[in-house]
Length: 259
Image (cartoon, rainbow, N blue to C red; front, top):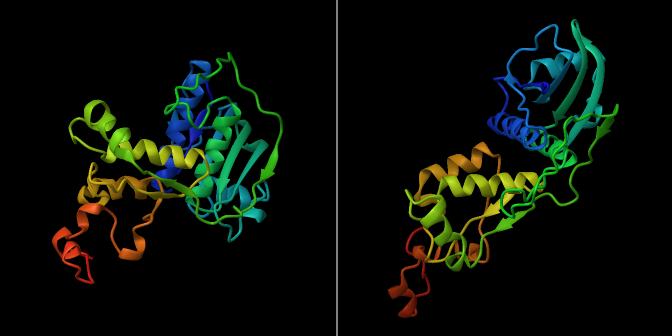
């Protein structure tokens, strides 16, 4: 039986999402899926606690009691700690605690564990096989990550007309007929698994402008992804469909239809 994973309902949405993905990753490796719980039960021999400092009551309590060291996370940027604790609470023998300085830090800690057990960040996009294991064990560990040396890191979806747009429209998201929230959710998951935080969305005529579909921005926020634009940003637009081509062709100095 897989260890239960505990999250605080008050934590960020991305923490809940990544905790669920960790449970799926454990099942991919062992065939056993962890349960997501909202309260630590006594009598649980081994538990996994995932949360953001200040947003997870168990992590904050363990820190207050001096059982969990979160010093390195104080006022941190996208940092996380992974620590094993003996007898952290009554009736609990061992706990694996993944704590983040902020919501992305927590997500990075979760996906660091996923990669350590054998799930590649590209498992879905590149069909990278997962090596099966009967059981998973973790040696005692106390690790705290450093803040990223580059603050914003991400993906620009470019030249999407020949690949991702027709694939999404025909096979993955036919109900949208284009790149939509379901596709962007998988892109955002990939960015987090690769320790990124930023996305410049598809912008050519073949794809719909990102903000045309209001669900796209909701997905990005749930995954804690910062939205930006690419080589168009000096012109203050995010998609070629935002140009007024008649004004541009006439030589008008402002080719922008809407800002």
